[in-house]
Image (tube, rainbow, N blue to C red):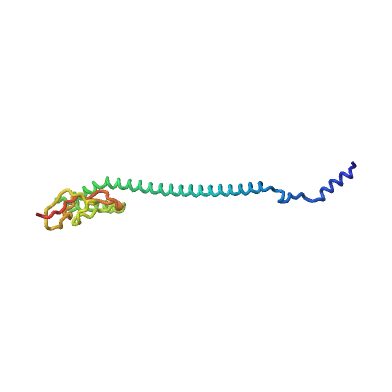
Length: 184
């Protein structure tokens, strides 16, 4: 074979154009089903992964909310413990204000300190329990004595022995009270 004939063979093959994939008729039905099954499996896997992602995002959001709630609860607990520690000071101020015989300047000074401490505690969320003249409420009052009287309705608070307090609508300490009882 000469060089010219081999060139013609090469040229002939290059003029045929690019090779085309075989027509779809050559694919077997088994190959088509496998491709469809693969697509379905991949779609199912995608759906499962998306579901997992959404669940993990929801869990993370719930964790964040729970953490914030726990932080807030801890802060409120810390403040309530602080307020409990300050209550005896407030009680002593109340007792000091009830005593007679002290000079007017002393009394004014104690009154100013008492007012300042009371307003600070109120800003923190402390609120006094209403007691005197109110119906006895075992959730807010602690009865330490009963007084027979006709001046106050039965089962109403006659006297407050020690003030009770709420901290942000939660009872911190009940009021110690004397309760009216009708004379028989």
